[in-house]
Length: 299
Image (cartoon, rainbow, N blue to C red; front, side, top):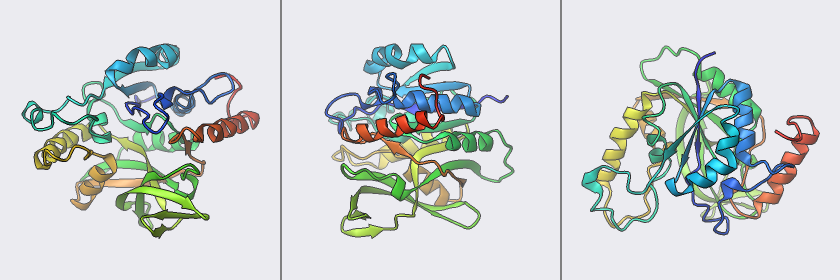
């Protein structure tokens, strides 16, 4: 068995979740959280290490609620995504900023912990078993390419919308060979009258979307590090909300011909907790999966 790591991005403060830590909300019949199901599926698929990207001040909660339990099943490490973890020459320029720098910075925080292929996921998203199986098989293969290979598990837009508010999705253009052609980070996509709408325009419900499930190799860290420096250097000090985001980073690399991205298609339904009101929907779906025998009653 080859070493493959799961990276769980869990540094979000849960601002849309009533101030609580949404990643730690129980959704399973015995108090399981979404991450329990993600890690269960990843272990079944062949992953043998998990790195949680968290805020340093959440470490105690994470370790008590999930870390200690997971250490009995899989090797666990922590990486810390902190607002101030940027090159020293930019500290003064962005001293007024109050939030971390996005998913690109989150992955960069893992640089010293990972020397093997790895899969990136969000802590508060349920992706389904097939997604982990597909990604694992891709990551353990040898890829003969002149550019860095990457995989992305794609989902159908209509299966990723929330009834409770707008969501951000990476809308993907995919060629007939399942290669990613373009990805556009699209904000505030709402479900209105059975349609997906943002800023007054309609988006095809069958569009392939990125849910931040990326299969990557260690060489990607060097690209991220260089890119983050360039991102900060070009950013105006008055822009306190700009983020260094994986879909944008990978989209830019794609246009520059530096990466090749294979889109793996999962037929499993995605669901997640973006808003507090989403929790009941997630609990109902988990219960259905338990009743169907997809998961044991107690993980």
